[in-house]
Image 1: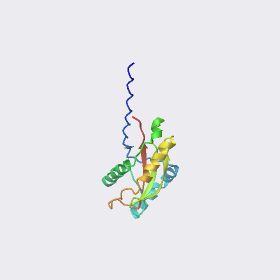
Image 2 (image 1 turned 135 degrees about the horizontal axis):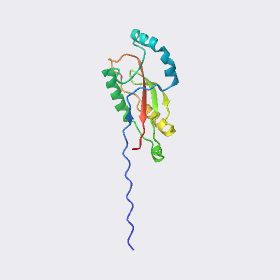
Image 3 (image 1 turned 180 degrees about the vertical axis):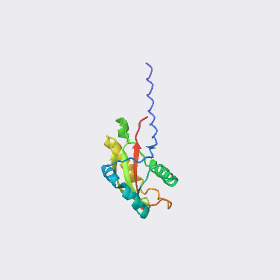
Image 4 (image 1 turned 120 degrees about the vertical axis):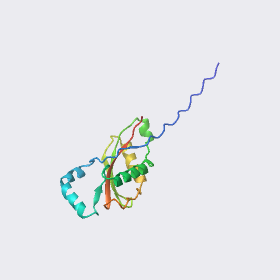
Length: 156
């Protein structure tokens, strides 16, 4: 009787790079509630450069360059949870974080859930592991910076 052929060992799936969408989304209610105060914030920002600055792509070449460096740095800490893969979970939680010029996190939170706690936790863990973030160049004004980062977890 012929011996059965051994089953080939499954090859591990390659780790997908996080797809970082360089776009700031209004992610929590406190930000959208403060939007009515936007005009006074803008004038205060012109008078006092030591304010919090909300980063968004396309604002200037300095900001774009920094956001590219920031997303590359964060991508080194991206990890798709194995259990979430096995369960077929996909999503794009949005992590909202504030950091100082030297790259220290001031605060961070989940701006929008992916509806999967494994993915939400992985996005927050990525941010904590990546601290300190890259230092902000002198050409950018402000003392603290806020950014909303969608972290895409996709199985394809």
